[in-house]
Length: 82
Image 1 (tube, one colour):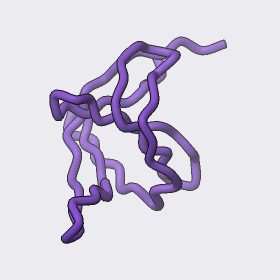
Image 2 (image 1 turned 30 degrees about the vertical axis):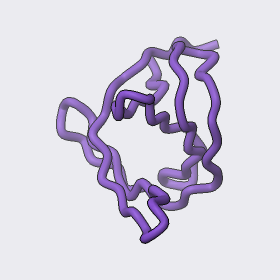
Image 3 (image 1 turned 90 degrees about the vertical axis):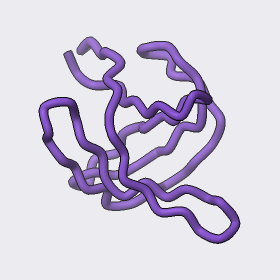
């Protein structure tokens, strides 16, 4: 089983008139940009792999499903492979 670590990322997102957030892309610390193909789900949840809670977005990048979390303090993180 591969290890995971919490990595804070920058997120580009759109907001509709009702205030709903739709993440469009994420940028890692090293400047690597990943476009989000699709947002599959958004719900309040905890990360069981790296710790932390907030709104968990189930997203698709390059056809692969992963999670993007928005913490209460407004910071975004992913469960990156070690």
